[in-house]
Length: 439
Image 1 (tube, rainbow, N blue to C red):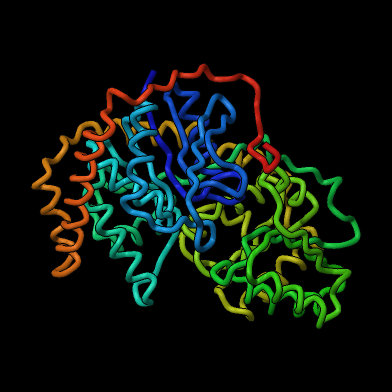
Image 2: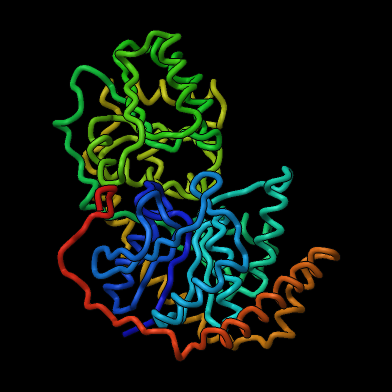
């Protein structure tokens, strides 16, 4: 048995998304490499307690309330008793958190360091520096990552952003991109229409995903090209804007809205298209772009964040995140596709060679190895790191850290580690179970 790892995040299945898929696929490959991996997340509706997925992956769905975009309500100290019980029960050595906006992730890293465990953090997003929410998030991230063993970012742009936001030592920040299971995203040209150019959009329908931009672009493209249709999959608060646009412009027969879909349905939607449109305003990586290219779609995307690092130039076309630029780029791609200047038949094999979850797992494994070369800091040195987070914030963070440490001492007295039952190590299962909504 290798390392014993706990992946912690608010974002996991049955909710679809890039972080959710990343955690699941990385966990599976780490299990294949001989490590023990569990996932800790919050409950999703009636999905609570302990579930078992492929290869014996154990998932703890903790019954916490969510407040916004499936992020749990910050509990700080109330999560510690549950977290400590799970970690001791499973014999965890490394806590690996995912997502800057995940309360569970940030709290788990804090408690893990209090318990003397190794801690790693993967950042999947880009944030600004000027608005109030970014300032608060960055200050909180600086506090949590002051005593982190290692940080992983999914792109070089994301790395620069995280280093600046959390004031990190760049030598402690690694870049490991996302990947995909290429066999699950094979192209099928027979599913695509021969009479129309179909443009596919699969995204959460939120402002930062460029849905306002998409709402403005669709009527203009439909007016310019009569043989073009759109398929939009996803859900969110901006869905109402797309519905209103479709009604006002009378595009019901040219814009198909599928609503929320499971991750195992993404390929079936993508193979119906010819071009994938990605109008996001901010993106650290964009796994969906890799999935689209693997399915044989040509990608038109806004040139933001780490997106230019994802695919080679012959697979994608970029536009600035503005209405006119995106219309021009998408219209040019449609014309080139109709005239046979875009050939996508080799995309799948090329993507398959570029991205592999096994490679991601092996690189993550090397990060874990490097973490064990670092000696643990005594409590006084940890407090010095937290104190350096700001004139007033530093004092507050030290106070929080001291309370966390005292809570650990109390929990050890109230419920000694020796009294907590140990979980047996389950042998991996060889058959596959897809983590969909019906489990």
